[in-house]
Length: 188
Image (cartoon, rainbow, N blue to C red; front, side, top):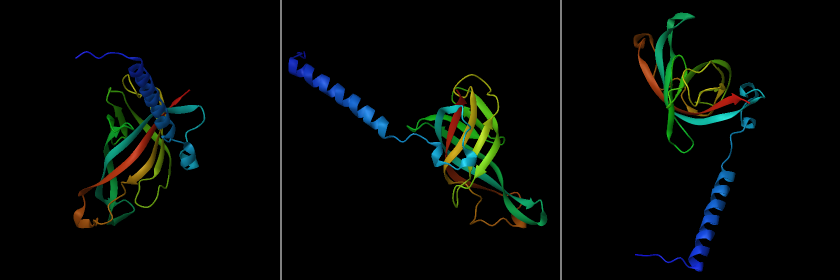
């Protein structure tokens, strides 16, 4: 089948191309960009840095029932480590996160750890907001040059409240689901 190009056909193609370009510009302009104005002061990244990568982490935090250091006759849930898949804003996996030590790894193999600088409450039942200063990256790739990581937009992840941690359960583990955005910053 042969398609004939007519002036009307050409005009329709131009109109559709303009419409899709306009829609793409509209969609991009309506998507909210991450703003530090939305997070507590103590976890804001210092001036001189810009967002390099935004990811959404979905996974679980493991807690272990341990003897309390300050009360040997008692027990409490203690943080044992996270594991999460990191996805971009479109939902495609771009990396992973695990610990200890807290480690972020891009699918290209670049990875880094960091040092916690500050936390702030993020609401009942949620892990706290967090600011981490990145250690030097291992490998080449997306994480090269990262200076800071912020943990924001938190849902869940706190120690289990419905499962008791008693002396007869020392050593048992519980996994709690969580979600958090990890915002990676680089100096400019």
